[in-house]
Image (cartoon, rainbow, N blue to C red; front, side, top):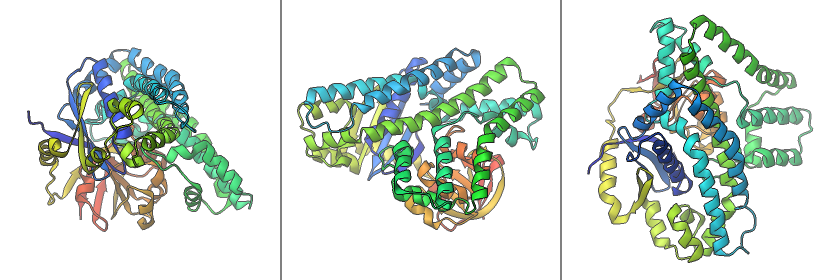
Length: 482
């Protein structure tokens, strides 16, 4: 059967582990709301990957999630309770896969892996519902936008601002606390009191925030590079810290005022609170998952060593192959290389198979045909994360080493942003991403920085290159080449 595929996210230097686990868990979330045979996939090619879906693959379960969130508070309470209870449990299981594992027999190591995997799936079955409801189509944020439009009128100039305020969470994330700690380091630096030990302490607490899927975590040089663009006057650093500390209270007050002005009913308040809450947990859980992935680097190295593989080859082992990897130690390096060259993890419901070599050729051609983009397109459309109109020069930035080309006011174009490129985001006149819903990293950071941002374009990185002059109308989600 031929499928029409959509690309929802694309990134470099990412592999089957752990990206396929996230897509697998999206299928468990779909199953939980009654969708059992939807088709999605992970496409890997030459050290890059894409999250792909057939049309409706995530929209169908996403609509069921939205309906349950609108009906009553039960599902939202379950998602929040699951995150609160099960994130620490998952991290504790990950800790058992860190450190020196060389003395453990294959059976014990496999049991520890399986224990972590079971806890990860249990957590993510509910925690990933925000992704399912937002990634193919921004179902939840579109519903909130619809509510505001009904209250204000379709073209009211307050629409973008009200959406930003109502959708933002005032709760402190790990990333927020790290930024405050970084400002504190900057204050010490300006007082000539910044030591290597203090940077090391910061890294011990927060290095994993920059880890992503496959690392590396932040190093000393990363912290020094992030300190450089911060204010050079102690008084301004202090002002920034005070602003950040006050921001949650200001946001809560503004939310109350808008809620009263719009005269929201219980159902409308419920769905807005759902977007706010799920946005917080998606961001928070994402970083804490990264903490687990960093701890489990030792496990990946041990698997690689026992099977005579490189770390990257070990990243291409599928979950259902881990038993053989640890009990038989017979993973074929040539097969792993074949998967690195090109492979697809094809999910139908919660069942999956990994295709590579000759078996992936037909599906690969099908995917490429589906994802073709006309290079002559002059207009790109996406979703508003933060409104504003800007004209500027495109700079493609996906990784930290690409940030050096960013100048103040340039338009940052990325597959999807991450904490490694925060410095570039702070310089940007506007931000454009291929992937993401209103709860993604780019959306949340752009609202904090008050930088115009268009997310979920799906094709921006395919059409825009360094040096292009473009106009961004973020309020309407439109980008035009000039």
